[in-house]
Length: 153
Image (tube, rainbow, N blue to C red; front, side, top):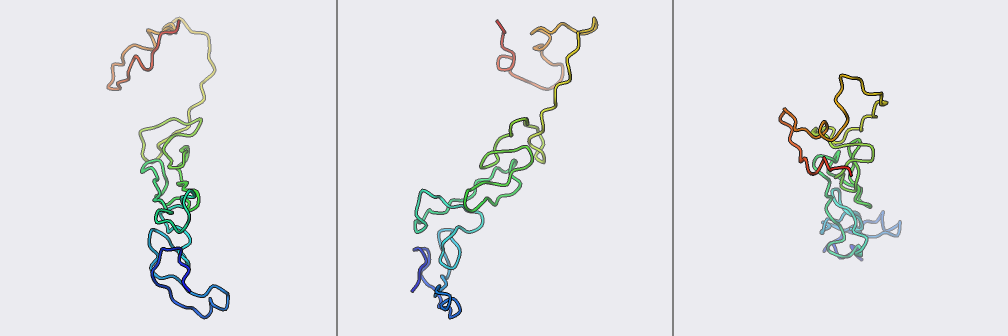
């Protein structure tokens, strides 16, 4: 008898498998399933544990981030995508703690450099006040001053 978890219409008898108490092999598993009994998700999909394996939508497509993930094939059980160095999240969509976003698609998150030890300000340096930090840059880099420079009362 076919035991294909409602994902295949046909199966093939196999004497070797019959001797192992398995019996038949399912043919053409559907709904993104695979295996002798259509009992696991095919590559590129992972198991939605909130649904029985016999459900049409028991296997969900991997949703790996196109930049943060090191590939598009996730873990078939957990759905965890393979993340690039410094990237985290099930779909590899954010920087890990201690990392900051970069503009590079090869290394989208870079380690935050350790701040050098602070020294007493010399007479040539500008005073460390909000004006010196929040002046508009002469370059092309644009930042939202209201977002990054809030008054410290």
